[in-house]
Image (cartoon, rainbow, N blue to C red; front, side, top):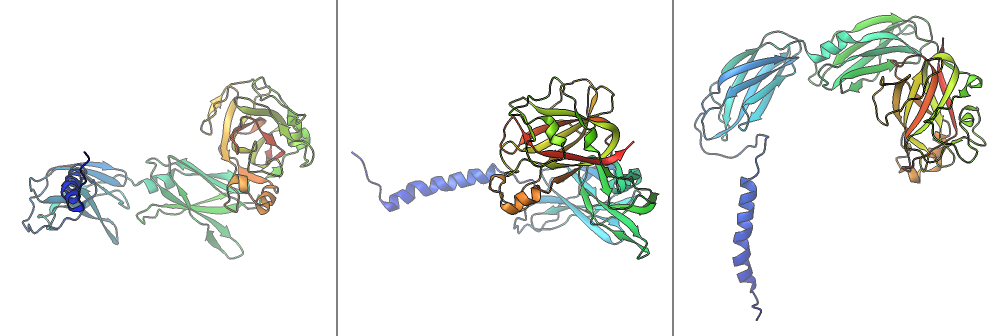
Length: 409
């Protein structure tokens, strides 16, 4: 016989279970972030002890032994990072380490440590001295190589710690007799490679400085360079240089139509291949600055049109075939070939999904999409165009036309 449970009985059975589950959830979950908990225990915590310091670039790691105070919530560090700013760092009582960072320059700084209770009562202060090494933003600025680039200058170097940093570029405007600053470029990762372009190939004066997220700013470095001349490479000199690992071609759309100077008629159309590769010579040695790609009309953002692209180049007279990795960093060597850059075809300007691009999106793509070759790429005589991804996820490609710009040698 089925016994029916009254509403009041149901609450009697279920509510204690809900309470137990909630209690278990709280007791099994520890937050690493300090959480203010109300407490009426106004006793002062003991101080942290057994303090050790490891000095880093622009920062220091401080380890310590926590006090035995049962009401402890977090450890607080207060310290100056530059002439006008005091910074605070906190870490919960689950840890015995705190990072103090943001120092404007190397040198000796005094850090004040407090143990703080759940009632927000501080311990007595403990003073510790740290000597951070040269900050990362200064290391980046000092290490940047300023060199002539196509239509301007390139600024290339290392970001030793990989921390986010801002690169500020300036160019002298003789008409206004002053330097003008461009919008900052935000960089993360271990490499800095940025350019300032749009200038005539006559001597120009540029400047660069760096800043970090703490408001610290480096000195400005100035340099005079003569921008490199850039021109459209003559496609009448291009020729097919087929290698065994090149993708098979179908439907009469041959690789030679990929650089015939026409957006009408046929382009390049491959059939199924593990990696879509097309190889051709450019008839000269040239330092390449950029390329312009026209995907197949009318749906440039869908189907077998290229979305992910890698350009490989070679300056060997008769480069040999080599297996190319699907994924690699610029500068990677594969036989006679070097990765000159990895590129992603941009999404439709309208913000619509690729398969729903509107007429304005297609009109924009029909003007050709520019892709800038990294300045570190070497001069080359041969190109391998690799489609690492298509918009439709297919393992073959259509492409109408490609143009290369640069400086012939």
